[in-house]
Image (cartoon, rainbow, N blue to C red):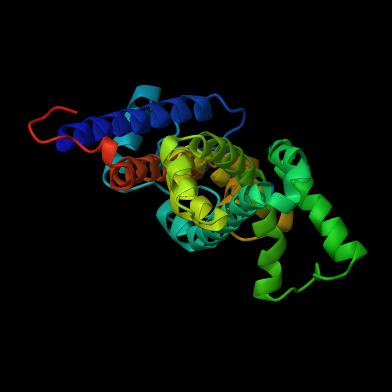
Length: 315
């Protein structure tokens, strides 16, 4: 039963990837401009019309749309993302050189977002802060409403120009990550905290929690051993869905802070109409989203025994 469910999810993931490829391919084809002409019609290159036509032929820019579609699809199935017209190198090489920085920002941002969500949830349960409970529960809604680019600019203005804690010019590697990580983490922490707070409230009313209190368990023990442990399940389930927002926030943040990564690569590709690079970025993001959600589907039964198949094929 478990294997059948996993195979079904894998099949759905393949359909999602195919749909993402098809939709992105069609949308990129209708973009104004032409990457080959943008680069090779530069008067400084001194290329003739015939030479430019040969370049278009080499890049397959004049092939029928259906032929470009299947050629690109088959190439990606073999791990070949094509060549960047502007950079003149393999798109795979560009991804390999820029992806680590984006992954570092995304992982650190998600870790900080998780800590912020837990901090808000824990503070809201403290007896001394019950008067601030409604305020604490409204904070996540404020966080999620903040545009990523505005938040990044505001943090630069506050911590770099006003307080002068973090230099803008030539910061150390650690200093250069502090504000970008905070910028990525704050919007992601919002839905995590909202779901965690709601889940804690629901779990706190369950009979087994009342039994634990009746047996004399301390408030902290009830919270962390009985309530928080079960409240994590909805958070884990939604964490995979937040990946899209996390990736989008990381790409925008890289642009705001001038960091080298997939965000900068995407911005340059958009400016130069480098379709191969844009297609590769879309498919890499879609693949990451699919893999994370598959991982969540595999891990959920380990945390919640109710999701595990019962022997004999029934649930």
